[in-house]
Image (cartoon, rainbow over all chains, first blue to last red):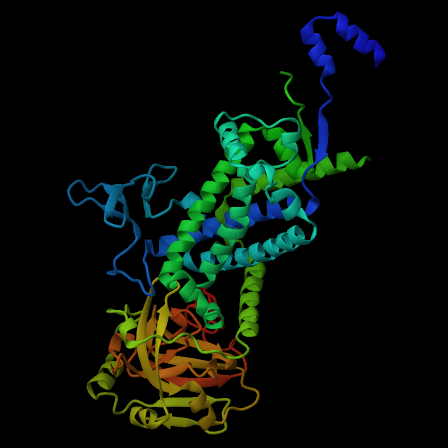
Length: 293
Length: 253
């Protein structure tokens, strides 16, 4: 120890920095419950999304209010039809009064053989499920999602996971810190040292919105579509403004979840896919030391 | 053998299984017969959970006249084929009778006028199709519970089957519900819709309203109510035209 310090003094600056750098530290980041519920949640949400898109394909229109059927003004429709002049299949996505040609992406998609297929969402996204099977899968996955989510919520509450890991620290809520964190995200700077040992404030806030707003909204708007569930909880109609509004909110929230997942995965790829994947599989996460300045 | 090797072996085997599953395609995974027990378990969970939640038999929300939707798309058959129904229609269902039989002490045969003379119920409720659309209508009819009381249900009866006049794909439409739903005050056989006689496309002269379940459970053109102890011996054995074709028998969601 003393020897290396003495040697460091006599060697060039760069070597000194290397020697002075503390060893990289391995922390235990994710408990077994968080890791298991995370991956199960990923699986169940995938099943819910695919079967949900299959269900949307059966009646590819969204309405607002209590009722909605062909002829009632729509919030969104995704349709496929043959162009009367060119006989070319055209996919049209209509949001309110605004129409977009989405041929190839939505409404009409092409399969592996280049054949045009009608349908709001493509077959690879819906698993090709028909109505009966899509309903079975959707409701089974919903049960599993609820059971898994309940285990996570109880664990988060009683183990101190929410308080310790997800509640932003007082220092993190200062406007200056938040602005700094936004800057870090925009410059794609990887956290190091002490800062890497806890979630950053934007990360904490997005997890909190996901866990306590988006996922519960998904469940409750889903229940509002059930005639039995609304018999037990009629206030759901008032909460969402009717069964068709709930269906529309269910769809919008699903899209927000999808955006969350995309950003989440992109960030994992950008901020050290190996380290982050290992931490969510084994729990162990390597904290890189602060950069010498 | 170290634990690391066995764990690695496990991961490799898991990855290989996952890979081959993805290669053989999601469709086979989704539709595989091996998944059927799991999916049936999901259905059973929903049915039993709803029975617990609804143990107090609360009423579904009833809407006001102003909430009735301007149109009400008809499900399924809009006009039964064949001379038999045509004859009933032109005679304004004068010779039509509703049979109540099966596991009952007193078989009934009621004319439309006799049914209308029974204590009735009018309700404005939401009809939701499993496809995703919904409409609101007003229904007037006789509670199924009323008919079952008159016919004196035997203690071994567990399900009520509704046989219909219409055919789809060459087979008679039918549906069935458990006694929990059959005795709910809003479960009625309706002969009126939106203040008028039940229109043909909505199942004239009599249709089922089972308000805590999805559209296809609400059988139209009902001509016979049968009390049974099991559903297996009837038609495809799954308790309904659509359940025989892979759809859920309990459709509370």
